[in-house]
Image 1 (spheres, helix red, strand yellow):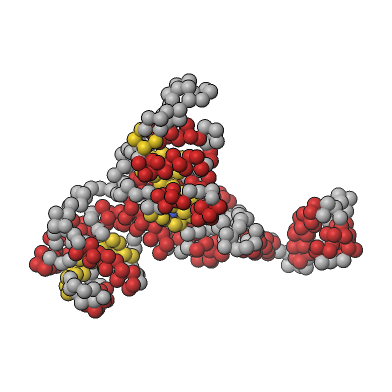
Image 2: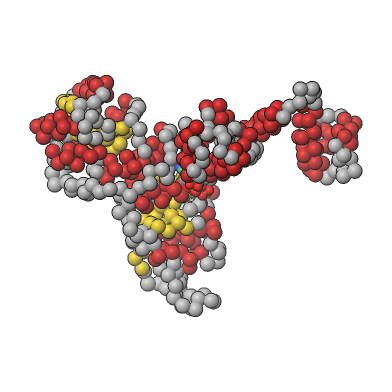
Length: 479
Ligand SMILES: Nc1ncnc2c1ncn2[C@@H]1O[C@H](COP(=O)(O)OP(=O)(O)OP(=O)(O)O)[C@@H](O)[C@H]1O
């Protein structure tokens, strides 16, 4: 409950949205005005000088994003929460660049809307009258198709990118391999005021471990054998721009200290030199491992961890956002100029794709689509056009080999066999055993150093049975 009464203007042509905000906000003791178009809203904003404006993007005449600067002017820079039915990265970024304080995607939970309003009203109460006017609207040079995603999780990612881009905050981007961490980092840079400066992605693991410090921070002549001249490091080359430190969890402890200094004091020294140099760089970091664990093990400095996490953007694995698969497939097919890309994937195939664990995430999906498109040669795609699911480990499972992967492989095998089935086939089970037992036996015999009795025991079958099976597969001499 708020203690002071403030006024809120809701501009939305959907009466139900106006009604919901009116009910929620008046319960908190606020005065609420509503308008169903930007024009009507602007009149009310000028008349009532609201403390907060809630503005829909899609409005009958002028849209909310275009009208946003006028709302700011009319209300003397009241905070504006933009709401939209479908948000892509471009909309979120335009909203924030045009001065929006926050961004909500419909349908939203009432508690999220309430939280956003409370925060914005607090901001409004403490706002200085001379608050800076937002930057002028300009055409955004964004390729909106680069980061594809319709799921609520991706909408949240777009919102976070938009909110954080213009600041100089460090951002830690987390997620499994192939979830798009590098793309997110590039998007943050592209939408930041450093976008004219360099964007330097660095994977410290890929650098020579003996030279990593000098690669990052440069060196002076004679600093070590082979240092024939002064040399600038990657941080200097990224001056006025952004550095992405990929796989930050692998950064050696000694380098972590230097990085902390960059973050805390904006300074570093070249190897072999004590003179401090100033670093005007924004630091983004990405990792696919749990940095909390690394901190607990003593492999990662806790102070650095906190410094890096000005904001954390988490990209959930693709298997947790199957709603994104359709849009991603279409995007990849279109980018290959596939014939009738929008009709190439039907609901059945989508359901089959959604069943896969996608341990390689979007990178695996992209490769799989490429493969399927080559096999299908312009016709509609079917599941058999796709390569088998990439084996991997579900990090949430305790098994080292995800059951889901095995399950997928068996299904894939069965589907392939059923496709070429002869009417009189009666050997499917035997065929399945013949496909799976040899590698199983082979691994077990390696494990028991060729001891069949031990292998039979582990399998829980009789020694004679194992001997017979091995003979049937022509594996008896080998062992
Ligand atoms: N949301 C997305 N929309 C379109 N393409 C995407 C998206 N996310 C990822 N990709 C594509 O998937 C591939 C992997 O993305 P990226 O390299 O950003 O992943 P990552 O999380 O940094 O992986 P790693 O941890 O292995 O470095 C790239 O080809 C990228 O273009």
